Image (cartoon, rainbow, N blue to C red):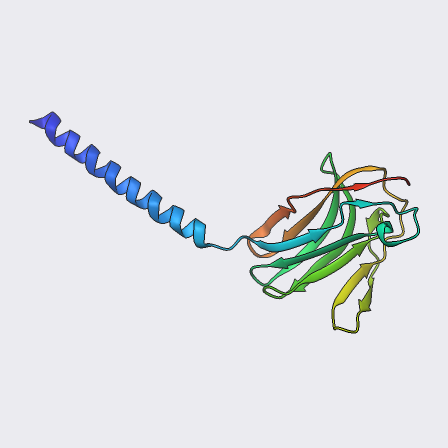
Length: 158
């Protein structure tokens, strides 16, 4: 009789655990990702003259936060810091350009198109980064989170 009682308790605990897992899964499915959307240029050539000489970065966050945007090499070494603690509104598109130069930006310029679209152009004056694969990383102040964008880009022909 004692083992039957134990089996009932174990079964009840398993049912409760499965129900809790189901609730957690449903919550995770309906929680928006930190980065709602993003766009990157696939290949940049800083030494060229034209559209492909800069990395065009655009992203939206699902929650308002302050963000630091860095460029990392394939070995996860920070090559350039584009902005630090930039306040970003919820679902507001932030557009940046990177000129391929390493180091921390000393301020940034602002490009405004006729349609109101604004792009921040950080001023990085270090040497041009080495050719290779790079990742854009967003570091968010709230929750102390750091998120690499899922896709990399290539820097060629310095």
